[in-house]
Length: 474
Image 1 (cartoon, rainbow, N blue to C red):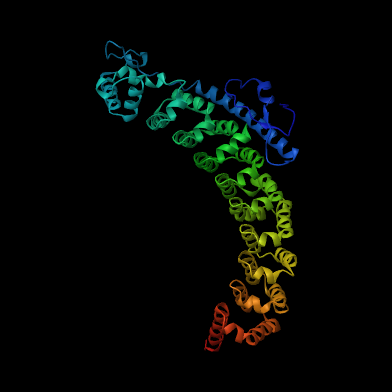
Image 2: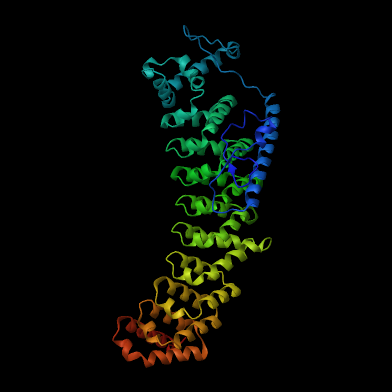
């Protein structure tokens, strides 16, 4: 693999803590192939640059944190002798009688703690009756190097969560460091993901940035995590936990590289939707740009089309500072409006665009569909698009659509069609003036044929009801 090739992506899983001061380690990034389609080199280079910036930022935070910790040393844990229950720790020998008594009460509390019971059993002991106080006190030290294995068992996971909230900084650092080494595997594990979710909520900014760097170093692995049922929930929690633009931008730059894969994934599109909901438009702009160029493929996917409603709204928010994203999206949808209108998923995307009530967009869609309104009106998906245009686009477009139906040789077929008669009812409501009168006359002319047809009867009944309503006093 060539580290200078921007067509590759980051795939190193080595620890950041081992070589924080080694610049070569950070610059020589191992890269992977196999990303979405033919992504632009600029997009890949952008992610590389943001990742390196984040690593540099993390190094500074770690140096600052290590200096601060020199002035806040924790009292060591008390140590019990195997032969007696006498406190041997230098930090405990000087305690007064009341503090000794309190400490012994705490040990008895541990005896009834299910997390410690689980640890005692896992270390080969028979349970509470034969529990060794010294072993229980030092159990945490004995799981060093085994945190990931412990996290995969329900009581072990709960024990680690308990220590994250109540342990000293050394314990918390050990849990974080070891969990970070196998972070992606824990995120997709049915039990391990619980620890990672808790970890994300309790860590400080520097540790959260470190988690992000570990996840975004290998974007293919990130895609696998986002596509997993458990991993999705962890990632959504991470998205909502991020607070700084640097963190959000780093995650978005990685997700932009796998946007198409995630958008078409059952779970991955939930993560994208979460980002669109919680991040500002200028943060998600790289992601929006990729999706705009791939919108046709996304719009026709059974999972992908679901996110396009929020995507359209977020792309609209980008207009003040980067209108190209929204323009590209609109141009692609309008160009393929006929195909999408007849598609079981794509028709929703066209409808969402119409609902923006932007005259130029609705005019463009109408022009693209002109000459096809009759056939679309008699199709399940297409009729939804025609109806949306009738009620959302104003009188001019409503009259154009109605005129096309009136001038067609298949107008009677439209009126008797299960979907077409619904379009006719919307046309009666939306059209005005001479066009509306012409439609009324057409229905009167065809009334004998409509009276003997199930859908024709429905249309005539609704027209009679509307006339009665108009005659009734206000």
